Length: 339
Image 1 (cartoon, rainbow, N blue to C red):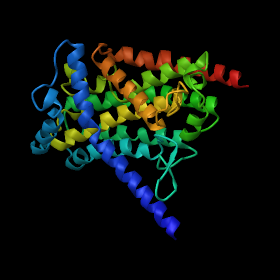
Image 2 (image 1 turned 90 degrees about the vertical axis):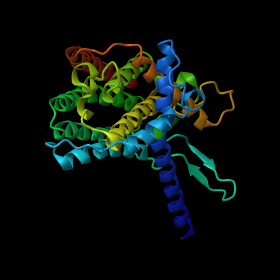
Image 3 (image 1 turned 135 degrees about the horizontal axis):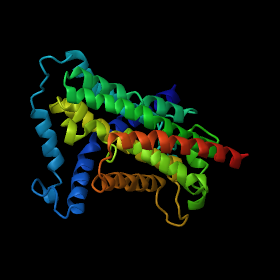
Image 4 (image 1 turned 30 degrees about the vertical axis):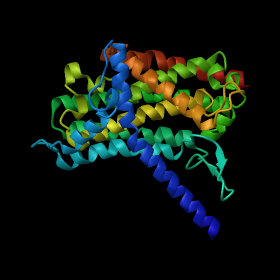
């Protein structure tokens, strides 16, 4: 009975900590992104609210809370209110199966604690299935707004998701073929032993799988150069053009969490997760993991302020005529290499 109670308490603590971290992530990330934009464009970025503008995200959050929650007169009210929640919940649910480390021992209880909520034996399938559900929130938000710009953004997002979800799934299949497991913990363990055991360096297919996954990930989270659903130049703001206040904040929260999810999966799939690439630097495994994820997030931001946006026909061409055929060839090559 005591063991069961301790297990339940530990699970509740893990859920609470994960929820607090994920909800608070946009606060530092928005500040970092605006600072990265400023330095890339040779300017200071936020600099007035707090030291070096560090409190600017807090001011933005207060502004969001105080904004009027506007619902267009001819909008479908219930779907309009439900859409941001439908986009946000899958982004959080994915982290049930994502590990950020292996285990450590509690000092007073002497019990091993795993740094994940669940080691699913079908974690890859679960993540691909659940993350795809957020598209419904985007589609419903665009349609329920009763705005042609929002509808166009929703349609673009649906077509984009269908196009690039296939390539991303093939990249995940390639990782499963290399690791012989659908469990993320086992995928990380299969890469233990240093830099040259990582899937990224499984030549010649490892780097190709990585690039396919990363490009498809950019498209999946609607980041430049694949942010056609939010194209400010032609769609004003796309699917969330009619949203304000906290409902708009929920869409932004889901986008940032999705960016973190792609970064985390890229680290787990290809860069050894929490594995020490050197074998000699005595850092805790979770710090290696966080450092790798932070580097990926910075890469997302760097790309946003470096590359131009694709035309829609170019976006479709990359997905259907380049990534998917290359993925099919890589599946064949990977299978022959494993045999």
